[in-house]
Length: 125
Image (cartoon, rainbow, N blue to C red; front, top):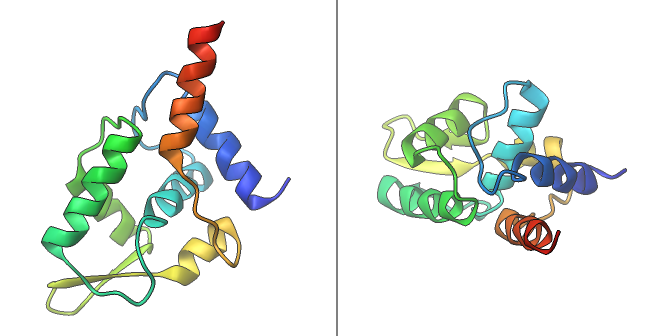
């Protein structure tokens, strides 16, 4: 199974209840969720706090998460998926960290589509 297939499989399991309930406690699973969330960001693009917050809010809405964007942003910084400038005014995607989890080139995983498909399957059964 490829890293992409593993990520999609994990997301299907995590999104089975119809939303992302929280961060998985297992570090590899948590990192997969963070890497997928980071996929919404562009490489080499410095994001201001407002811009990064808007993108993370959109991603969280796409998976109907019970996590707030500030917690997600902090976790992404703490786990190395986002880097902050020294003055804290800008954020940059750490592509190497994402690629380390999802493979290189890091694929874009649309968690919103996975959630929609999972919800569609449960309504049919």
